[in-house]
Each structure stands twice: as structure tokens, then as C-alpha cells.
Amino acid sequence: MVFGFFRRKRRDEEPPKGEPPSVKELRKLLKEGKAAEVVKLLKDRHRENAELTALYFEALVEAGKREEAEKLLKEVGKENLPPSAVAKLLEEPKEEKKESLLEKFKRGLRKTREWVGLSRFFSSKRKVDEEFYEELEELLIKLDLGVDEAVSLVEEVRKKGLTSVEEVKEYLKKRFKEVLSGCRGGLNLSKKPSVILFVGVNGSGKTTSVGKLAYKLTKEGKKVLVVAADTFRAAATEQLKVWAERAKADFVGDGEGADPGAVLYRGLKKAFEEGYDAVLVDTAGRLHTKEHLLREMQKLVKVVKKFDPEGPSEVLLVLDATIGQNSINQAKMFSSAVDLTGIILTKLDGTAKGGAVIPICKKLKLPVKFVGVGEGVEDLQPFDPDKFVEAMFD
Figure 1 (cartoon, one colour):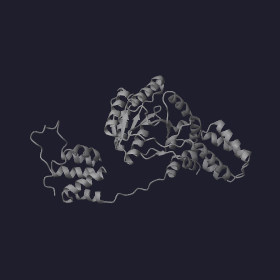
Figure 2 (figure 1 turned 180 degrees about the horizontal axis):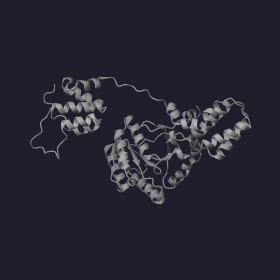
Figure 3 (figure 1 turned 135 degrees about the horizontal axis):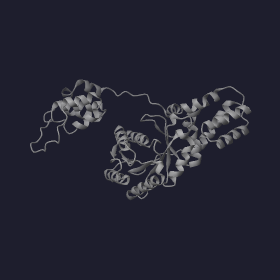
Figure 4 (figure 1 turned 180 degrees about the vertical axis):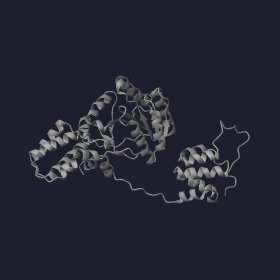
């Protein structure tokens, strides 16, 4: 079964540049949890001898590359491979308990509920009187709805003549859902490739949002290319490269100080020639040089239009939820330079200002495409107004 599998190097082959890692060194890497690195190092060498083949198989199993490991097992036979690695491969993958979207929102909005006191306020049995309305107004302001919005909403509730705390709670939930229903919107992936620009100030969570969306799309079976067009911020390219590797997406980037337009052009050329489904582009966000920043955004849009006159498919503004309504000014600034198509609201788990999504929705009139409810790779979630509001209150 394995006769002829291992191949000898041809004498006329060029010798490799530098010494390849020894078996001892490869095993050390594997022991350190660097299975993906071992897979990469042995991809073109694993047929040289039985020891390298066995080591390559172990690395494939540890790196979670089941299909490639199964193919090698079938080709070589289990008698030629480490039994422990074969047994691990043949085990049924454990199904982790998945959080529902509502559970994710509840976890992400815990501070909004507990710090502001939403849960306590609406679980109390008290009269709906003037004191109640005053406290409700204060509560809504703490949620960062804004003073005008809070006063207006409390007056609306007062005129309804509701008599119980539960009725007030249900009415507010209904009103919040009505407002937010106009901000529901899915990701536009109608083209191949769909080019998505991520814009926003430094620290808003652009790079992590790119990485998390890349992970989400590759899990759905899409061919994704990540482009590091933020060449101004130190380490931005390296950070994004790590996220791309984690998401199993391909990557195009350059060193600090490189021309962002040139990096994007190279990435788009690759994407259009090689049939990618989506191109996710990280961009710079230095507010202290605002005019230059906005011109850079415009330049990147022009680069996209060289490949697709109707592109980009999306220009997503990444806003930090911890600064609440102050982010509205950022949105106005970016929309003066490029046509925004949607919002990603990050760091909801780190703020008690979860209610800010309501004035953001009303004033910007842009769909909220995703919200960040945690630091995990799966914590960038599609925005669902109904579940979001339920998680705020309960």
C-alpha cells in the first residue's frame, strides 16, 4: 500500500537554501503547540521518509486539518502512522455547546443591565408615580440615550397612563425595537469578490473586527483575503496577519510606511485573478491628521473602483460603544469623505452605554451590521434588534 509513497530527491534538484529543521527540532515545535508551523515546514518534505510522514500526520491531526489527515491515513495506512494520532483522528469531534445569539447578547450587555440598574429597576414592585418617572428618566440618560431622547420617551410613557412597572418595561422594549428595526441590515456579499473596507479611528476595534469577520466567513466556506492597508500604525500589519492566520484566511500586507493604495492594489489584483469571495480591508484611523486620513480613505475607494466601478460592496464604520453617543461625530467625519454602508459597534461588553445604539441608529440612519459582545473570535455577531433589546432588559 505504501510502496513508492516515499520519494528520494532527484540528484539534479537544487539543494535547499539553509538546513531544514531536524526531526528533533520539528518534534520540539509540535510539543510547544506549533502544529500549524510543522505542517507548513513539512508540506513539501513529508514524503522523504517514513519518520517525516508520521510527524506530518501528527501535526495535521493536532492542527485540526482532518481532511488532509484522513487523506494521508488512507494513502499510507494506519500501520505506518502513530497509533495515538490515528486514534485521535478517528474520535468523533466533540460538539461544544453553542451560545444562542440571545445568550451572547445577554453576556455582552451585562454591564448595561447591572451597572445602570435596569434589572433592579424593572424587577421592583412599586407605584408608577412621579418619582418613578424621574428615576426612569435618569436611568435612560445613564443608558446614553441622550437627554432629549430620554425626556421625550418618558413623556410618551406618562401619557400612555400605564399603571404597572411591567407594562412600562414592555412598552419601552416595544419602542426600542421599533426604532432599531430600521437599522437591521445584512452584509452585502453579492459580488465575487465583494470588497469590504473597514474605517474608523484608532482604538475603535477595526483590526479585531476584520479578523473576526474573516473567521466567520471562512467558517461559512468562503475564500477570504485580508488586506492590511493600515501601514501607518506600528504593528498593525503584524496584528492583522495573526488574525488572518487564526481565521484561516489569506493575507496581503507590507511593512510600516508602505503606500496603502499600493498594498490594496496588490491585494485586489490577487483577489480578482484568483477568485476570492470576499476581500476585507483594514485602513488607517489617525484622528490627529484628520484631513490626511480622509484623503487616504478616498484614495482607497478610487483603487477599488479601478477593479469594480460600482465598488466597494461595503464601507463599514467601526464605532467603539464605550464612548457612546460621542461616536456620532466620528461618523459624520468619515461620511464627509466616503459613502458609509453600515456600522459595526464594538466593545458592548465593556460599557454600560448599550442604549447608545438607539440614538446612533436614529441619527445616522445607517444599518448596524454587527455588534461586538466579547473578545472571543466568535463574539462579532449580526445585529438582531429584537434579541438585542430583550438582552438589555432581562
